[in-house]
Length: 215
Image (cartoon, rainbow, N blue to C red):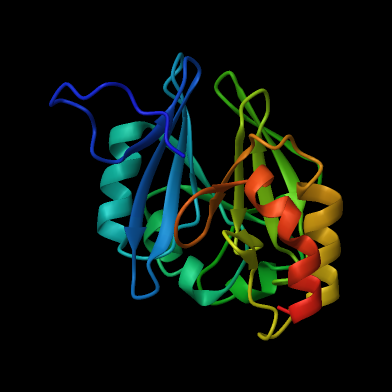
């Protein structure tokens, strides 16, 4: 699922995917192996971090090196927000949906993300997609004119995110995935909040199986 350049011995070990316009960097942090992504405009160097999950010192180093300007939270579960206090103290603005903002009451936030909002990152545009079901305010980010779709804990290889936690609802997450994510082309790369990448084309045919099994 990566589009890395040929190995030269000098390739950044955090580089996960890139094309002519965008770089995606990835680190895995914390006891639940959370994926943290940096989306960076190659022309301007502007960048955002998706999910300040844990291991704040590593994330701060990554942000300083890659030119991160702000933090976007896919949702407010505790394993995705542990590094927020340190990020805010360092001057990074943290954005979350209004529906999940109460989950951040102990760590703080700065601004809200709205459904269908376009977030500009240099020349890049990230489309915010409200995906309730894992939490009321879960949100995905699609990098416009690229195959990249960051789904947080909404969509994984082999199924939807856990809906047994507070705020979760299985019927809602299935509808959210079917109507808002499975509308993207088959080659769209899904970058989830934990684990490996997948594609819309790999996951879409499995929807009826997920519904039948109930998770």
